[in-house]
Each structure stands twice: as C-alpha cells, then as structure tokens.
Image (cartoon, rainbow, N blue to C red; front, side):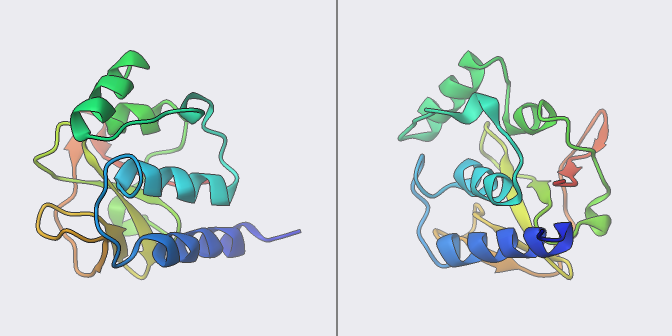
Length: 147
C-alpha cells in the first residue's frame, strides 16, 4: 500500500515531469489538464471529466458551462475536496491563482511553497516560488487539499 504522502508527492512529480517547461496549448497542456493529471495520479475520481475536449479557451469555457460550472473553481469545488489556506498546501494540492482568463487558473503545489503553473506572464508551465497572491471568493481562499 502506498502512503498518501508518497502518492501526493509522486503525483506532483508526475505533473512537473509532464508539464514543466512545456508550452501552453489549450486542451492538451493547460491548467485544467494539469490539475486533472494530478487528481488522477492521486486517485481522485473526476466523473465529469471523461471525454472532455477543447482546443481553445473559448471552447474550454463553453465546455465548463455545459457541465453547469461558471469556472474552474466551481468545477473543483464540485469534487468535494476540502478547502484549505494556500499556506497549508502540500505536494499535490491545488491552488487557484488570479488570472485574466475567464476559466480561472489552477496550480499544482510541488511542496515547500512552490507551485507549478501556467501564468499570464510565460508561454510555458513554470515552477513558481514565493507566490503570495491567491484567488479568493465568498468562501475564502481557493485552494484544495487533494485527498
């Protein structure tokens, strides 16, 4: 049996190996795909994700809306994962970052405060350090413990 901590660290590493330094490509290499990859590696079931396809941000937003979600935050909340303070994030947890995209932006925690993310400032997924600006909504910080 693999311990939950080891599974989470392996999931974060798998995300880093698959996405870090790779260019953004909607529906192939973007934050929803990266978050789904992490969730699957940890063993979280995402029933609404099966068969989803999009090739642009507009298609991605249309797809989310067809599922009944206004953005990625609502989609992640639907999984029933507990919300946490971003400072409490462990390897494999998900954190929402502010973005200009209507979909929202998700990052995967790599541990020790480092986040793997596609940002508005870079064409590639990067490991970010020292991030202090996190998305919040009426429920508080948009960060989730992936269990």
